[in-house]
Length: 264
Ligand code: ADP
Image (cartoon, rainbow, N blue to C red):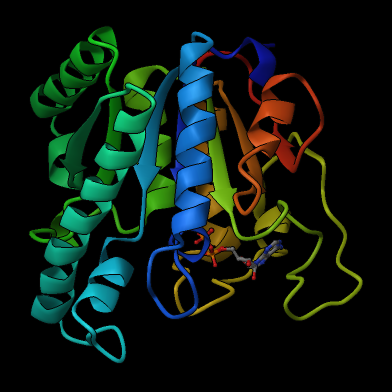
């Protein structure tokens, strides 16, 4: 079984509630820390793909809207503005460490059809071969219900599959999976290792913890299930302290480990 320590190609997913302040504006300190740690891991020889949420939240902040638009064109307009801002920041911060990013916007349509999935796979290979850190998001500006993946936890699992990653690391606003939703149960305890992802486990998972989160633990379990079925490992760790990535990749027990069987 490969562990995080042995992982060469890693997909990292960071959620909106980690990347933004409750005001909806980007958490610059957090983003800088994450970019710094990722740059260092890349320097140490890891290949990294970042699946980053936050476009709509950042767009809402940048446009000075009081709340997320309720209508689809409004959300897609906020995503268009926010995605630019997000990429501008990633490009700027990664450049400080001499790393290059490339934007990859995907929809279910591009991932489901064999020929376009193959195309996506080849693009990732080319980007990684060039030493680029791909920054991935759902193409929220054009995605309609019929063609959207729906949430970035699931998208990150599919990206892990397509890129043949050694593991998926989900950075959340919580330490990992708990025995019950900690928002409702004070006695909830952290689960360090999961071998079986079944209905009983799904029953312990609740929805998003904040207005900026989307899928909560349910979509994270679904993502871990996709990766596990493909034979890979998933880790959920707290993204508020990106330095914990070093500990995880040095072999320490951090967050929740969904045990897979090797390469995705
Ligand atoms: P992210 O932006 O990281 O995807 P989410 O809000 O979508 O954040 O998901 C994380 C939230 O899921 C936690 O903050 C917590 O409130 C909620 N949650 C529901 N059930 C559980 C559980 N069993 N264990 C841990 N967190 C849970």
